Length: 110
Image (cartoon, rainbow, N blue to C red; front, side):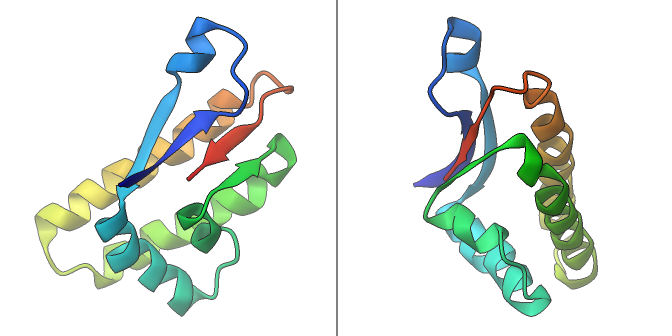
């Protein structure tokens, strides 16, 4: 299984095709949850079970994603793994605000 971001209740083909990969369950558990626990984050752990987010949730979620990115920069020893994780986080951080350009959109993360 893996975790990704989709548009909740898509209304057209473009919205149906929207998908932002987050992580496999293994990677999420190994790195994301470990970072979340150490940083005492509230939103990131919920991604594992699934949650609908709205535009107003974006600032705190983006802040948590940035904290996870910084944590990985400091704690992931494998350079290749760290680079992959940082690229993925950068992509997610850039993609979420773009999705919310349509204010009626809700995203499902899980």
